Length: 243
Image (cartoon, rainbow, N blue to C red; front, top):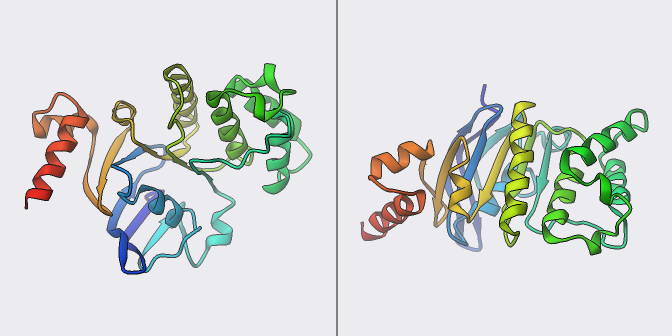
């Protein structure tokens, strides 16, 4: 059974097709990279799969739950971290995580242990009493991820989480993601950094709402005789535009 599956998933906004007939299957414990230029449909895809938006056409299932018919039940098993995660800058690191624990209904029993584990996991323990507004960009992203993980989701949606973050913080962020993979968390990760896409189990190239290519990064490069994913994707998009 696939953890994420879409069939003909489509979303239109006032005649504009943001996601066009998306057919996608992602397995458990996979980190799938969704790449493409701005306006390609990555964020809309994330919102459709997390139950925030309803599709115009088609269907999708996440962790065995229909994203429209079972959206409320689905929320117990997923977490969505948008580009601008809703941290409360007047709260400390610890207070932010506790606040999201309340939102997700995490029981008091065992909560402190879970929070400490997340703090250690993300390297935030030394900063637990620091106000969120005083954190660096990279530390804010780690805090956002910790808040998104507080209820132990099975599927994690990350919408360009390292955008604008320095290279060192991006590296640390990926170390955390690889640790999550060992726990069988399925991750859908959108990014504009193609060097990050190289680290994914598989990648999907979106362009103008369509999934142009979906495969293992090394295979995509080999098929296009390209030295990098960027070179391969430029070739694919140019070919599409020419046709």
